[in-house]
Image (cartoon, rainbow, N blue to C red; front, top):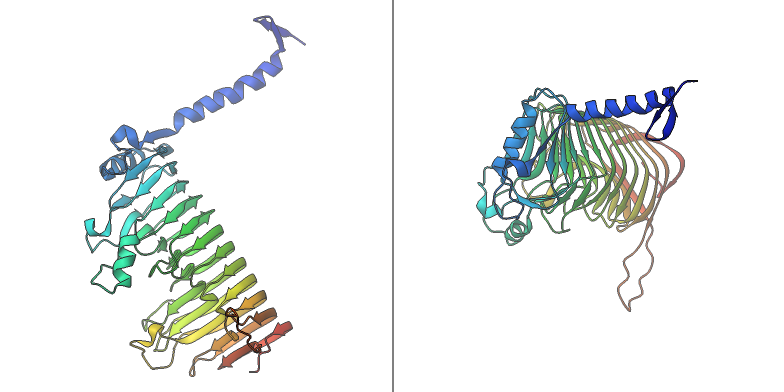
Length: 410
């Protein structure tokens, strides 16, 4: 074998070949990925100066290039006002790498008509990696709790009419409204997301999905004041796995049936989830009014309930606070829903509730291997007689398999 000698180090020529080629390839790849640092476009890392224009300039540079690019946000705090990252772009791969904290303005400094703080609209192949979104919702929470004349508030992160979007290892804190909304989109992947808001923060849904197809939510921890995950009409092929929820209002399909010509929800899987101290566990809810909507092909399985007030719920007479209730029968058809391998403790005596429509009974409801035990709250120094765990069902048709506790009597 021939050897080449350089700097007193001898290497076989074949070895040199295999060292050189990967090195050259890495250099080529490095040249083809454009990095647009928001600081280079004028972003001020003081958490006080509005850097919206700088972020939009960095976005424009990436979006207008046909090459893969990274928009980089360094490790500091950046104040950014309501911003729309608009596509379509020439590039099929844009990475938003956030090492810092993005801070929203106070609600008094934002127009009440603003619906999204940060919005990605009509984009494809975008990845949002890392970082913190600080929605600064505390002052608006106080306003709402005091029942003053307050704006609704914007969602922190909106993904609209988009395709192939990844959100990974992002933290969302104290949004003024929802944390994350996915609407009219497909092939969306959320992984390792961390969501935090106070238990008494109003309307702070963690993740809302509507009119979207092929959405996955994995390895996510949610503590908030409303639904941890809510699913709206037009959602299809949604997969939720390894999610913790609490405090919050659980994982809910609905509310549905607000309109007559409403799209359905189908092919939803929720598995390996844990709820702690939540208002609900897994829930399907619809208003009592005429609708052409439907729910079918839903699986809730491998769930743990820790002191959950309503662990398993189908409610087709949904009317929060009992205000403005339609007082009619729900037209939403619910069928082919499975509840399997769900265990834990209930904070209310009725651990399973199936309250279905008088005109459209729930059909094909499968309940398998359930063990939910009512834990009566104990007040200090007070002895209370234990009460049995119960279930409630009305207008429902289905089967039970394996061991089911509490027993279903319908």
